Image (cartoon, rainbow, N blue to C red; front, side, top):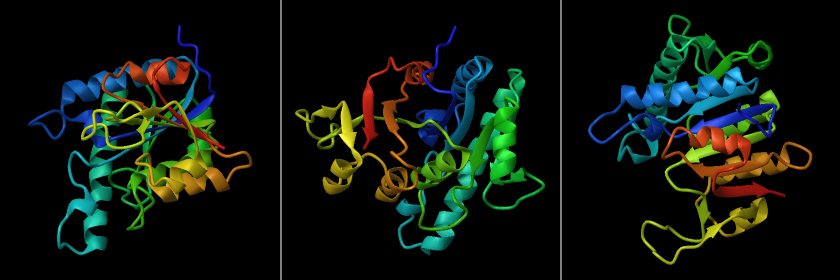
Length: 238
């Protein structure tokens, strides 16, 4: 039985969580992630999801391409990932919907705050796609925005790394992981946690701040450990 610390959460998953070497989308991995998410939803946790698109296309790595066009391509990549995840969740018996910041009625429904909250309260897993619908904003910022709009208790960020470090642990063996950080220390130290716009939103747009937990999503079960408070990671708060 899952014992969640939270009633309503926003999971930010990297696109790479759904991919594997040589595979843009690893359908076995998609199913594994969906199976765990379905278990969490069945336990009564209200859950929103934002999935990145870096496994398909990353706008900021597009070279000389026009930034607006590149970011729109990145947004469409998140829609592909969201649809794949929704399909897997539905096959496992969970109720799920994709709400997009860009209107594409033949593909998914447009995002509206009241609709999203109503779906969460009915027990649906709501997958937020297409970022904020605007260029120059990352899926980190979209995650903070949606978490605030749905009144999430926490933003849970599953990444490649098991938390926030004082420097890149892939380059520096002596890098030190933080267990806790303040928003101010992340911003002042330019720490590689989330985009600074996302940190500022979580700090400023809710009284007391919206807490962020950064953890590694190398195993789908870490999603359960994260909501139960049993996985290693970094808490960012006031």
